[in-house]
Length: 134
Image 1 (cartoon, rainbow, N blue to C red):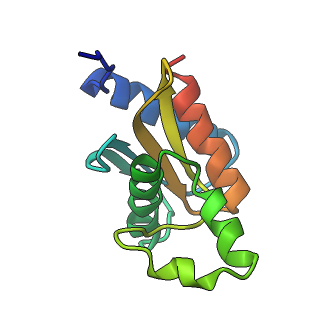
Image 2: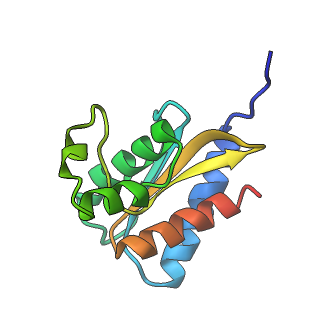
């Protein structure tokens, strides 16, 4: 039987704090979402000034990243390159850059999704959260 790491409440708090610090350092108003490997929401923080819609998009990005075990940018690129049929994939939402899987010992244990600024900046914030675990 394999053993796999799981995210704790302390891990989620640490990641949210690091992602929030990155966003605040750049004056970016975003929503940050962290999910487990099944895409279930563990933590959400909507920073002051973040658009209400970002509170829906960030968890969707995290969910998609966790279930697919890939960065959501991959799906944005697939769609932008003309494969629009991918939009019909079941349970897949948030197919925009800004969702990153959390990989520990080669296993995806969750994901971080961020929404509110440019997609590449969303991804930068998500990475800052993940880096707090390493």
